[in-house]
Image 1 (tube, rainbow, N blue to C red):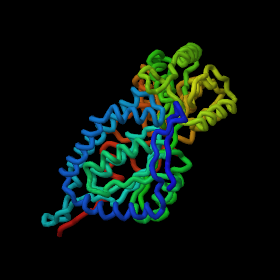
Image 2: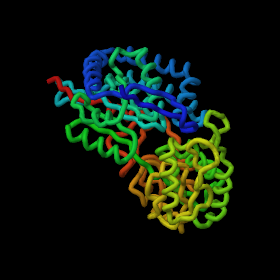
Image 3: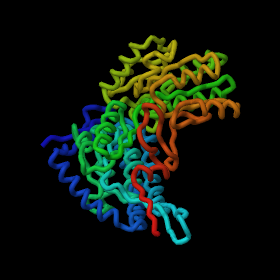
Length: 454
């Protein structure tokens, strides 16, 4: 039997988890199970679904240390961030436990006094959830929790590099759900089979742009519903009047923490020329002080890149850049797939580091002639997930957040950092379909009917 194995990026010789690969025949059986179980789950009373999700949250909270340790070992996330991820997953399940109890639709005016007209929602059926490795607990949580709250069954296909965390979450879910409501599938080609299956009525994907587009095309071609969160090339704009110290603190965490492996990580820093030199010096000094050690150590700030191949790809991108490396760009003399936090001064928005998603602790620095030029540079990318603006001027903040082309805009805060009750998603090549998280999630995981009694 073939298996799917995850390893520790801090120590690639260590196998963290190994699970059986799902064959096409086994996947068909799982989808049949989910289809039947989903019918019962859809008819389970909303208060009972809410109770089940709260119990899932309880178990996640009880097992915080075990889950955080597993995340840290499996994907190299600093242990303090891993604990934060577990806490957020717990809160996400609690949030959607309550969302299950909210009104299902609206009462509308009738054509006359004898007519009753209203809308109601129903679950889509079996939903495919395809998730990445970088947030191995919370991204599945923000897909699974609303899917289950609104009465769907789920086929859960995680990244091969995070199968251990995914399996642990599935085990917790199955303690409190009807058998077959969540089925677990892993292995090469499984995601494509989920996207192709007529038993799957909707697919929610988070991952690379290339794969996301393939999933959207496959699902849409058969008339099912697709949702995809894909790449980012996220700018932070620092205007001349900004609090530079606060900006640098925010950028350091969003660009380099967890080795820059977040879709919302700061990829470009765009600085007004009036404060450019002093900002550049401060960024370099701060980046050089970051601590690269075993992510299980609470003092770890950066951690390793997910694997050697990804680390070497990032190094190749730095080498191909036309910019000047200000700090980093080298492998530290420690075991594992580490890369020094890297800041590269690039001449313009067409540089590789200013256009492509590198997904490593590598950030481009650009000089802007004016606030308008800074916004122009920020928008000069195919992506539009997150953008950040530092300024003390309220009028400038309101003006430029209207001009910045991104789904999430943050003022005097880093590009990273999300609230589970707020809609999440981008523009341009970053996203397809409806928003995730918060009450916006209901749009994807349900379909509505308008009912009229005449």
